[in-house]
Length: 330
Image (cartoon, rainbow, N blue to C red):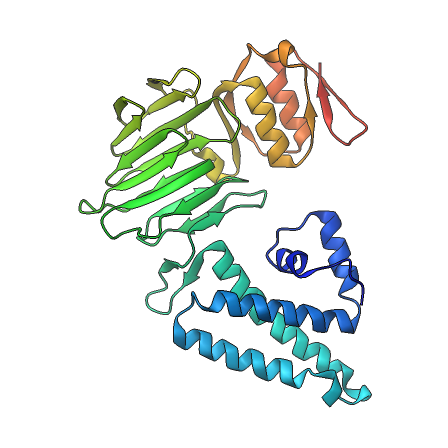
């Protein structure tokens, strides 16, 4: 058996967390039957660890089905002429395991009663390139932009509803006066009762932005509290610990949910970093050249060169290709 693939990489592969190079490695490795059997063992072990967070009746049903499939797929019990059956059994087993891995690693499970989403883990992530929509345990909706992570408090809903955000997310909160909703992003905490708002809290950026679309929110940061009304944005600066309130620069700060790229008057270096992350392509620049420049606007999510031309045009900047497959700004 090729030992270049281990259990951690195998589970990451079925969770959709591998790079293109890792994906190619695992898929080549899986072409050998002995490796497929090893994959079954690893995913079975991972499922057993996960099943403790499932409803007991569901865990038992899946355990029975998985056990039947693995037993039937045992190559020692199959004649050579029945290899096709082994492959079918493996596929069925992996399909069940992958479903378990997806639901419980993402942190959501669509329960049988009413189809509502219940949280069994404390995080939801979007590692894809497109916005991802999820339902919180209270029925509230959250859209995660690419690379965003929402961490759900384990006691969510008992006395209050608390989540922590890194990246960008749009929240549409179900009203519940008895259980206020809090979103923490860095040093900024947003308190709501029932409203729709957008939070930008990208790692490494100097500022956190909270934009209110409807309803009413209270923003807490350090010793400062401010109340937002629809159409306003609160801007908190980490370095100074200060917070200012203004109006939207773009028409809809949450238009990225529909596939747009929204840059709400942010420093150009941060805008380029976001584009680099979104497209998974390196963008190089001289910080001194662009440090005092800002960009505001709503752009179609076209190819990266098209978006770059639009973003750089207003500052009379250009770009060229680099040997690492990225772009350099000049």
